[in-house]
Every structure is written in C-alpha cells, then in structure tokens.
Image (cartoon, rainbow, N blue to C red; front, side, top):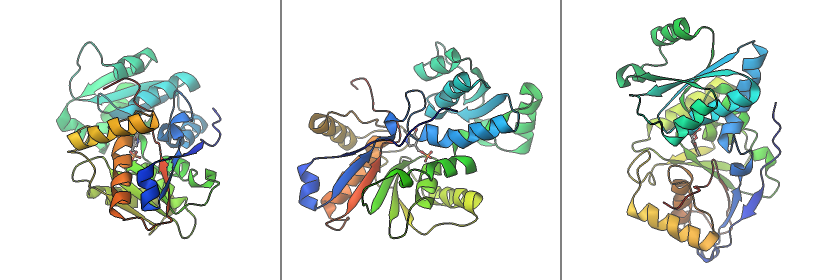
Length: 294
Ligand SMILES: Cc1ncc(COP(=O)(O)O)c(C=O)c1O
C-alpha cells in the first residue's frame, strides 16, 4: 500500500491573529499525496487494506456529480488494482464534468441513481439490487465515512509535534471530525465547521461514527454551524471576500466548498475573542487548494 508520511505544519503569519493572541498552524494534509490528498488518504487507507484482505476485487461507492470522494475512490482503484463502481446521484449529464471524466478515465464504471432511490441507497433492498447487478463488492459509504475511515483520521493528531490546544476541520459527513477528536490527547479539543446548512444532525452522525469505531463518544468536540455560507457548495459575498483577502495575504487559494468555510470561521471567532489569548489552533487543510482563479 502507498505510504504517506506526516503532512507538514506551517504557521500563518497574520496581524489579525497576532492581535487576538491566537496562533494558527496549518496541517497541510493537502500535500499528503497528489491522487489521494487530505482526508481522502486517511479515510481510504484502512478501507483499502480491509478490502484487499477480505479478497474483494471491486469497490463500490456513492456520491454527487462533484464528489471528491468518488474521484478519490476511482484513483485508488486504479492505483491499487481494484475495479470501481461509482453510483452517482441523479441523471447523467454529458459531456461528463471534470470529476466524473477523471473517474471514468481511471476505469470507474459510472451508474446513475434517481434521487428518490438515492435517499435510501444504504437500505438492504437497494444494496441487494446493486449486488445482483455488480456481483461481490466492498461498499464504501457516501463521503467515505465509516469505522475504518474514523480510525485513519484518528492518526492525525499523533503527527502534530508542537504544543496546541484546538484542532479545526470542515465537516461534511463527520468522519474526519470523529476521528480527529478520538485521536486527541487530554486537555485538547476539536472544533468542526459545518459546510452544510442545518447541519445539526451532524453531531449525531459524528457520535454514531465514534461509537461504531470505539464503542463510546468522546466529549472533546463541538460543531459550529455559523459558516456554511448558505449551504453545501453555496457561497456568499462574505466568504468570497475572505477567500480573496486570504489569497492576497497568504498566496493560497482556499477551496470554497470545505476549507475556506473552516478558515473563515477560525478568523471570525479569533476576531470575536472566542479563543482565549494564548490559544494555538491547528487548522487541518483537508483537501487540495483551488487551482484556478474563480
Ligand atoms: C476537502 C474536504 N474537506 C472536508 C471534508 C469533510 O469530511 P467529512 O465528510 O469526513 O466530514 C470533505 C469531504 O469528505 C472534503 O472533501
């Protein structure tokens, strides 16, 4: 299996943080691996090992038409010799967008599921019908968040070799936060920023994932849902202004679907004095930087 060393740390030099007495150190998981950056590698690592150990030749997963997870599963399949099936929500649109064209180029078989069935995609009749169609497969849930994924993400805090108080990450399906919080030592906490509107159910998902992986829920995490900018893959003028300003100051164009929402949240909370002076925050860069001007 592909080996990925600890991702680098890089402190932000920013007068707004200095004024608030808060240090923000980036954990550059986006640099882990070009094909499987960020939480994708951490989530897939133990799943791929389990799939191989149990003799599976096919990985099947679910996602929307722009899913980073579907893209990563396609790349992992090509790299590690699994056939892959991507069950995509909604209708087929041709030509394929970049994500799905990449996935198809990796050899992923793309199939489309209507939205009504997609809502119950995890239920036995739907999975059974997929097994009849595609044979034996290792099932990765939407977003890749399951018990092995949580265990992979729990390794992140152990790589941080500087003193810190809080680890922050964006929250989509909750697996990354569940793992990071589970991997923290005493006296430290995790703060997730929901990228979805009305993400209150996310706390239940994080708790369920921790229970599945460890049999208990850790009391060291919270989710802030004040920075979703209108909902999943939505943006607001405030978020866009933050991204432009951050790019001008730090030379990094943050991905607006996930990482920018977290960073906007961190800077806003620092400005409000929510973090006591002297706090060191680790901001996990969970996916690639945006690579083109918006
Ligand atoms: C770049 C990026 N960051 C964060 C997340 C959210 O992670 P999770 O779904 O584990 O909450 C995702 C989705 O998997 C993602 O693609």
